[in-house]
Length: 84
Image 1 (cartoon, rainbow, N blue to C red):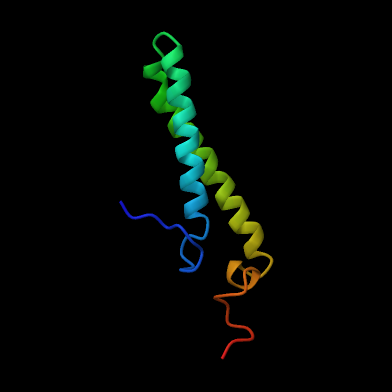
Image 2 (cartoon, rainbow, N blue to C red):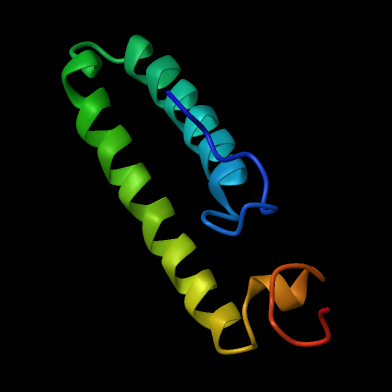
C-alpha cells in the first residue's frame, strides 16, 4: 500500500502525518477495546469515526492554507511565483 510521506510531491502534503496519527489512534483504540468486554465489536466503528475526523481536519487545514497561497508557497516549493 503506497503512502505519501512528504509534501515534496504536492499531492498529499499531510499524508505522512495523517497516516502516523491514524496508526497511533488505531493502536490506542485496539488497546482500549481489549480492556472492555465486547470492545472488539466497537473498535472498527471507532477507527472509522477517528479517521473521518482526521480527514475533516486535513480538509480544513488545506482549505485555510489554500486561502493563504497554497502549501507550495508556504514551504518554499511548488508554486509558480518566483520560479525559473
